Image (cartoon, rainbow, N blue to C red; front, side):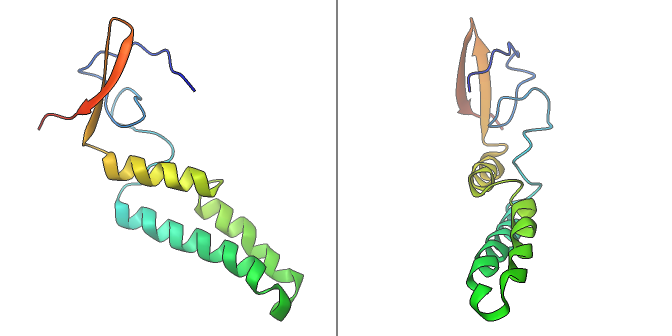
Length: 106
């Protein structure tokens, strides 16, 4: 989805191009925390369906746990992983209505 923000280079940061330091709703505070959420999320989703023959349909109650841990969907988790890894390494610069991702200066 294209964005129409006109943030100046000094105010824009993060992979998502959101002004300020808040980032997007997909990224986590650390890569380790994000991977832990992925393990819980994917583990719960897999267990919800793999354990049906053993414990019956009650195991489907694990599916919402997995979706909450993944913040909605597996693709959202993957986007968040990319944002978490790239946080602080990329900066969005917008000049004359054209935005580009560039390496952050340290």
